[in-house]
Length: 495
Image (cartoon, rainbow, N blue to C red; front, side):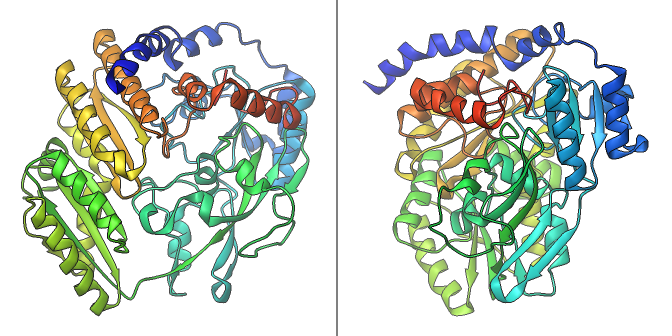
């Protein structure tokens, strides 16, 4: 019954991917873009300074693409802000002239979220890169929008605390708020939604708000609507996040990592589910299929067994580590897994996780000249084995070469990374078709079409399918209220 329902839905979804995807939509929109007036550009220069405004093609193209498969759609002008007052001034100017305004951070997104499909002004906020305050005794800090997660952790390294949300890329923290990023540590520490306490946001008309009240940094509140989480995950369509107050966490007393392999994907994913059902407090559980492991071996000169594998990390006291590792080891053996291959010292553990984080480059190295396309879905953990196994079948049936399944399976989130020839329209379409089939399958299994990448350009139709017309209407009403002229990152999240 499940497969029949999916078959009925799939053709419509595939029709969307062929005719209305971000790739063709970008080209259509680009033809309709009116030139910016000299008066607007001069006004931008007065707000941010002449040296902070650029119309150079190289700068515009750099700000017209992220790490997704979507074609570059450069803005008409790039402005670099150095203060919230400048951000406010630029927003007010663009709103008055009804010119699109696209916030830009580190550019590491995967769904075309910063492409300027309707032209306009790109506002780069990476010069606002100060850690404003750290309160070790309260386990929180406040950062400007240009601070990256690695920069923050380097800044607080002597406090015994860290910010654990780790999407892999060294993304800007406010950009991570914008997409509700998560990553390898989400199984223990949650996503950005659980770790953002307050934000300073510039609205479309230039007004500045603090979502939990200026200076507030309490662990909880019952005061009014949850404005903070309204903007977390909004992908720059409701406001520009300029500061964030974040939760910090204590660095674990001890940590060890391990790799174990399995005869099948089913066994590896079943092991993940059983470990979580036993209530074992894992720090990380990452899955790589056999082709991903093979890519890692060749790129990082590792010698892991080429088979579906789990990368695990245990953290806590030395005694708890031994107890938890013993229990997990029994579950692994029960599912036919190999013995653990341990990484105990810091350098060895860092190398192991660097290998996992470098999977994109490892896969790209196996097919020179081709580009990556990554998609992600998330389902309840109990449905994870089915969606991973079915996704593998879709890939095998299509005869795709260069498709890698991996992910943060500890919270039901997994990714498919395709390395494809972007000049081969048939291959591109096959990849898009599989991606949409997997997303529809995840939705049928009570999941979501994206666990952490966001909607951006590529999954707008799927969002409609996921939350329904009424849900989209409510989102559009919120958008209309906060951005009546539709200037903030237009064309993203929904049409």
